[in-house]
Length: 232
Image (cartoon, rainbow, N blue to C red; front, side, top):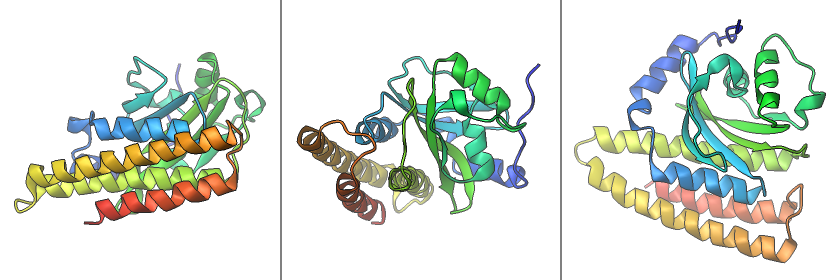
């Protein structure tokens, strides 16, 4: 029998925030695919996911390196831990993790999928409620520095900002769908440009883990350009 996840004290408000922004009816948007692909490339990891955490299920919005991802019971997903703690969570090696009542079921389920490394940052709306997580996974253990965690959270914050801007466009008559499509195109252009920079840096530095700080600094600067697009 699955153990129900420990819900945060603000769970009702968190779910209301998820419903208010109409995220679930518009699960698929190619810009989220771009974000998860970029996250995987920045950290040289094979799998990246953007998952929404609903009341009883974790639902994949976008995925890279894990085709056929489907909704999973919330208790079996480590994204629940991210939601509950509302901060970046890292398991450098799940085989060495000490399970707690909150994550024991999820650790077992993740190990059963042959995943040993897991890192994720909360995707927050209204700067308070975590509605999902931007996740990185690998079948091998991996170090993940504080600076890498900072960049992962910056990526997750841009996903959050994109969701909020999309909702505002679709609910504000003077903006509308046309304005969102224009921003959408600009976001994709910035993501593609950043992806090209990451490919260049990987050619220059090689696939090094953890990612060198000078590389992460350049990535953060370019993420700032993407943030400016969303602030229009």
